[in-house]
Length: 192
Image: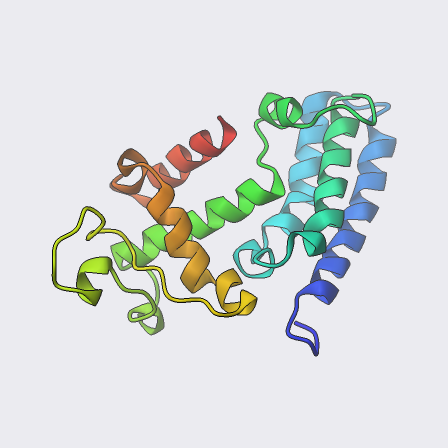
């Protein structure tokens, strides 16, 4: 975080490192096949996009624009597509999650682990379920309670974004029995 409590400097550093890695992938694209380029992507770029994305990607979309553009660019390079090709089919072709979907996967995993009691003790009272907030029965009594948000900082926090996203998932995904199967089902849902 910077002095204004934003992630701009962190996101800028990530974008700088991703940009350097894209140069390597671009030069390699002339002599390597798609599977080798995919290995390069997952070793040089994906770790920067994945690391603590559930924290720093909860910001204004304008702060993430550069990273999103860089990720789309490298996908076009890997598939040797036109510079202005639409990227949704390219992501699906390579079975790669875009930055927004990586964020949702990490938020979903955090919420599943929270609900299952798999997180450290310090997280135990972070969130509440709707039936803990009021005593009368509703259709959403088993969903997470969404806290009130007066500021964007609170709106971007994991305590709001997590329950909001997890409540939007189908019960088939939410009620699986292990973290691994939850992640597989959620990833398949995000790729569809």
